[in-house]
Length: 220
Image (tube, rainbow, N blue to C red; front, side, top):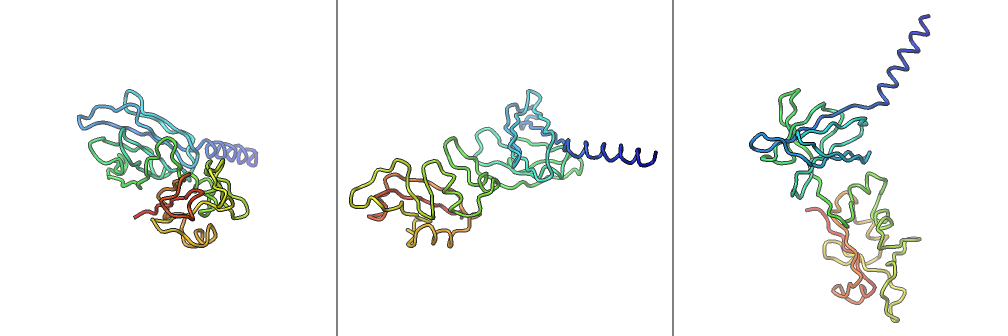
């Protein structure tokens, strides 16, 4: 009988664990009025929510490794907060999106900054959470590029006859990298990359970029 009770309790605990936790997000403006349609995301689980007319949304089935990303309308940054540490976070649009109030502890919580990625931009932070380990991994995931055997080429490149076998030039913070992808992988820490842009016309960077340029910008 005791073993049966133990088994039931174990199954209940497993069910509760698999359900994950919940987090309530509340957003109001400087007049203490609710703000609707504020985007709330979870990473890496990739779920998206929006606050309702009461300025609230409930995030359910969160994992211990999830972070919550909150974006105010028109903001260029998101505030990222660990999901497993809170049951409720309150935001006010008169303050920074990187600050939230935790009503349980009665304290302000500082979030981490994450740049808002515009439509069509390459989301480096997401690709890192999805498994990218270095610059080569990131370039493999860019739809404009093909990377095989350490060699890079543009998809449907505009090539000259003289330089038909030349890969795009990699430029890091304005400086061309001599040594191609292998050298760029060596000198660039993936976590310091702010953005990557692919230029089909790289003539601004000289003869080595006639078949395009890959512009890597690092965080300051």
